[in-house]
Image (tube, rainbow, N blue to C red; front, side, top):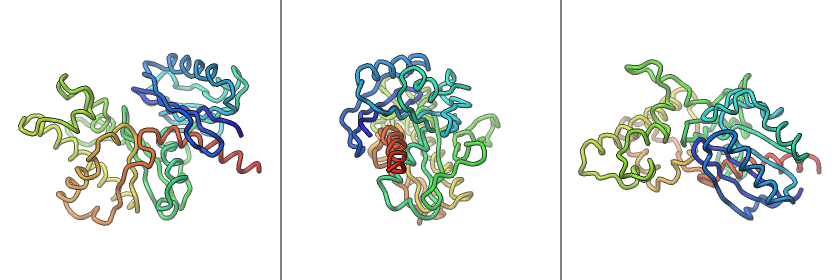
Length: 285
């Protein structure tokens, strides 16, 4: 196994990395996603720039058959609906290509790096442009019959509008539509909002109240040992402390639950996708 070109396609930005056969990062970078066609074009440029890459690994939002590489629903990138990413790159470049769901790839990264989620039931949540997740049971990723297990962001939010999902309440894209233009991003807002501005403080509090309710709902159904949070929200430095404060303020149902950020933070999807290559090579040895 030579170097791996690993891509994590997000709804806002696409991260990428070049990793060696021991999964060490040799290079990292990112570009704006824009749309599906732009992503494919940019990845092709990266392939030409890195002709020695022996494998391509791709983390992508949506409902995906990881064995065939077929994307049934592209999540935040609707250009990828009913699209086979694996066939696209293998047919064009004759490079072995691996594709899996983005939240699952974060789970892959955690399984590689952390011992605490290799036993019992654990949950990985990805919060970025959208909200996704994956279940890890006794060290194995549980996908469900139709590869939809862990799509927590698609669950309905039973409030005044029954069409609302957790994606519409917790995604960074949704939050960006509510914050003033003076903040560069939702991360900037969550880090630096003016606590003396009551509407902004109310928005901050509501976001964390919603996130705490989301976590509690998951614990009532799954009762996990660990919840790992990945995606763009990991750039919020006090994320876990603030979340824990809101959870503790609403009861002790989650008092024994371990919650932490993903080991590789916003590059967890890049690393996790690359583990698919290493797993296959290890099986062949």
